[in-house]
Image (cartoon, rainbow, N blue to C red; front, side):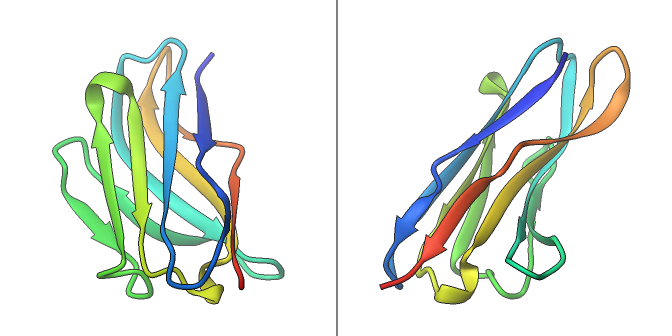
Length: 118
């Protein structure tokens, strides 16, 4: 069974930084595109950033220049470095990965809460 587990969330002051990690485990043959999404209270889940297996990254306009997505294919891990955090970045952050296991599916992590507040 494939699992994605996020970590690194927490409380940070405006202007601060956090680094999120998401590790895939289980019977994984290949991981294709990985990404981070977020969902603020009362809002729909939205895309933050994605990265292909070759390392091509895309970002939502709201985080361009502040967030950096990266991955370590040897560790089945994707990262999100978040700098210059703003109160509007407060949300549950989820990682998603397209994984070839015994089947070919999109998997989601359970989420990690990021709170930006003074």
